[in-house]
Image (cartoon, rainbow, N blue to C red):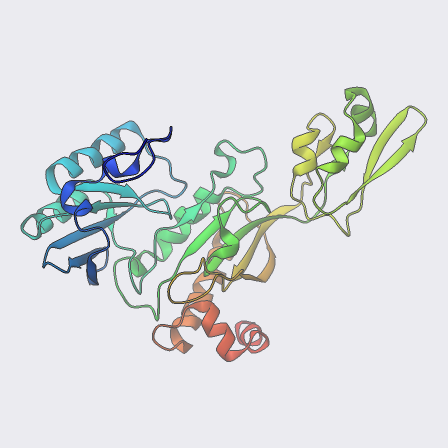
Length: 333
């Protein structure tokens, strides 16, 4: 069974039922995408139909209260055809009439939200939930990004960078926040590895081979003891992913020496370039809430050097390719 658009009915709700007719009718017929000002851009269809979108910056981490959701819903009803969450945890009001644009921007500012983060500017920050509800967190990613954005906020509302700048934070090596694929990534890191309590592991009755199977790099070695079987962690292989902790929380604890690393040059791909992983520039920086001055200072210096030396349209990864990684490190140091 299919619906009128030819999409199988299935179980999953059809996304197209959320899209208003004027946009559905022009699917695949958009011919221009132009930035009018930071956070405001225009789509033009081949029949002359104009669709203006306004991008709002939301708090890092993707959390929205019921009051904020009601506010966004009201703005959709009053000013737009529809709305959508962006892949970077922001929000767009789609289909704003040109005659209502100034009124909408004034109301957004009155409610303490910002418009911006498009084209050659600092985009919506993206991160995991950090300490809020994750047992793996090394750093508090939302609070770090909040303070980073406060310091760099001028970059959100002006197109004054060589290219778009995306900063993401991942609270632990698992990279749920996507730090390793951003222009600048803040990565939670453990300097010391997991600690195993032989007594608690044996008492828990957890199957040791089952536990070892969860280590992605084979860093857990079987350890025969008089009272039973435990594991030993090969710290040279261990990548501090916390998989063993999740499998045996009764007996394994992560290390206590924790901080952040900074990686640069990543990107998620797109029409202007292929995907690439960021490279670690600073391997360890203390990140004790809320003392992030050292971390933020290094990010500011990095952004300043990129702005001073990059050519128009050159993202940080492309900039690194042109001047060379070793030369870039030498210049930063």
